[in-house]
Amino acid sequence: MFLARKSLCSLERRAKSLKTIYPSNILGFSTSAKLPLKFKNAKRIEGLNKNVWVEFTKLAADPSVVNLGQGLPDISPPVYVKEELSKIAAIDSMNQYTRGFGHPSLVKALACLYEKFYPNHIKPNEEILVTVGAYGSLFSAIQGLIDEGDEVIIIVPFYDCYEPMVRMVGATPVFIPLRFKPPVNGKQWSSSDWMLDPQELASKFNSKTKAIILNTPHNPLGKVYSKEELQAIADLCIKHDTLCISDEVYEWLVYTGNKHFKIATFPGMWERTITIGSAGKTFSVTGWKLGWSIGPSYLIQHLQTVQQNTIYTCATPLQEALAQAFQIDIKRMDDPECYFNSLARELEVKRDRMAHLLESVGLKPIVPDGGYFIIADVSLLDADLSEMKNDEPYDYKFVKWMTKNKKLSAIPVSAFCNSEAKLQFEKFVRFCFIKKDSTLDAAEEIIKAWRNQKP
Ligand code: IK2
Image (cartoon, rainbow, N blue to C red; front, side, top):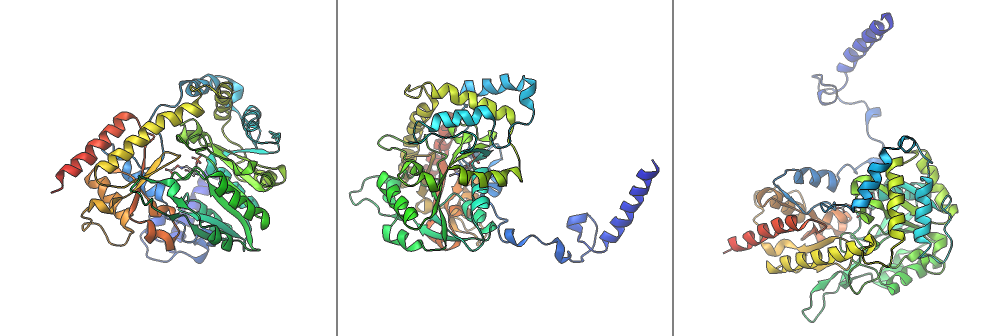
């Protein structure tokens, strides 16, 4: 009691002295004094405070808004995935910490699955790390392998966290754009019309290049890199002894006529590649936030070091449920009902529906070969953005305007670009189509009413 009163008094004294130093928005005190220098952000996060998901998820949270923004499914995840989790939650031991680098049954299931694609045997305990989502794998790979002064090649557009993660370790991102070559014959535009220029790509590699970050199938374009395109990247990685961080979270989501290739299976690439996957994208359970990295043990061990000193381990019941779900689908991989096959079939119909809808209002969408996003140049809609503040790229203003006035949300594509490339992409917005038919019906109604309002 005495001690409690004593510490209360010292807290009060401390509060009084703080009141004279720090501003009111921090302490709730009224003072206009400046924060001491030591309270400033660390240099490594300078300028990284803006985030597209924080900003646009908040806007789309209004229940009257039809949300085609962030890539989160509103379709039901497979029943067995949810059932496994509820069964496992009832087992006492499954509610406690598990092995830090990955729950034993999950790393075994992942090894068993991916061995089917790699020429080599995968050692579950040494060559796999289970992380908090694919984000956790990207973070551990970049923190564990990239140094200050290194260069990392990033292909534009890119999943938005690549650039800040590279900057946080003090490395320099070196950007190379995918270049658009529209088909001459008036055909639909496709994500495969976006390509790297091989000479331009070669020019980005030098002795400082530590890694290239690859994303196939690609977010936001939906591009599925061909075998030849990946071979060109692999050749350069080998020539310059460069690492490859291959983000393959949409690996199962490829549409008719396309095939997903894993660059780590190309000769000479296993040795230098970290391949990243996501449970959220594989089983439509983005809220589970489980991901994994696969690669040779001499690379994975550095990711493990980062993980053991940051989050240490991931949620046990989720990992066990995920292991069970994988075992169910591993046994029926050639069956159309296997979720790895059935989800892509279900989504292809939704992709086509979204493409036709956007075309019906005069837009030319880039039809994706994979993933669950479709982008279109929306400047053709001639929205009157005069009410919007003029300090943002066109697509940011457009999506904010559309969310407020049309009750439809999307994501601005310039969020996936470095500052120099934003201008090139600011007329595009991204729509997510892993949505129930009723959600797509609502989006269709909004877009068609919008078209009919036009003079
Ligand atoms: N890498 C890519 C390419 C991703 O698309 C994602 C998840 N994206 O979802 C948000 C969106 O684009 O609307 C991740 C990594 C992260 O995956 P996870 O959720 O497993 O951390």
